[in-house]
Length: 324
Image (cartoon, rainbow, N blue to C red; front, side):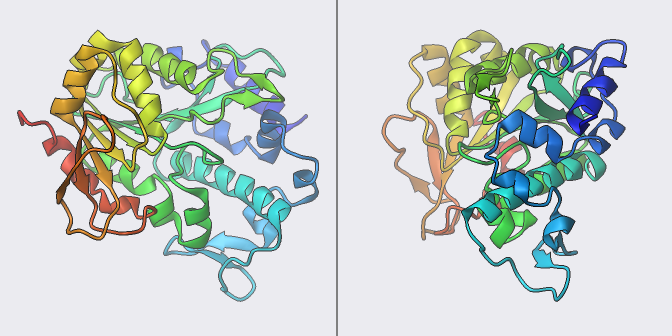
């Protein structure tokens, strides 16, 4: 049986599958999620299937500093063609999934919430205390492209390391504060050429997570959204405007490409509680003119490279609201 089938059976064995039974999908579920799951779900090209399924199969591993290195001699990643790179990227995705579960103790739940045997799914990651935590809830949303849950930029992970390229430092920081965490997966919405049920678009995916997790959470919500993730959050906010206003404390956009919300309630939220951190050579924290009519305040990260997401210091998030 494929690991995808094992995953579905493991989740079906719980009393109620998915996000509606927070805490039911245990960490051991992820032990059964391998490249079979990713390949079957993503509908990757046949060429990718010719390559190994794991980082170790490629002869790579992340060292103690989070750098991708050859296990044979400790050398850095070397590009060997696009097919090789895409297959390695899938192994990186799997590895980041496992790190979120094994090191950050997050749980994995499927979308759709009630997957049928053999049905394509995506995964959402969250803290076990997501519904009971009252201190804070950090929501992370990546941009568009090949990145999946837990990644800001796959190429940065491969070439520069897990530190700047993954969400792990944000997750670990939130946990150190006693906060809960939810990690969205808005790019992983089409499988085998078909939309995922209950999450067939980035907006439907975000709405499903909102309705079954975020709307039910007790803690104030803090959001970090990168690039197109800003568009995901903007459209989510407009589709759940009143609840969004009530529950979301602050939004940190990083190099967001969102446009101004049309809903006046959401406009007010963005003007009062959101900052778009953008890359430039100006000193850290310099106020800048918002791009277009985004409504969110804009400030500088102090770095010229857009990949340095850690410079958008998550510690500023609780202080972003003008009224705090």
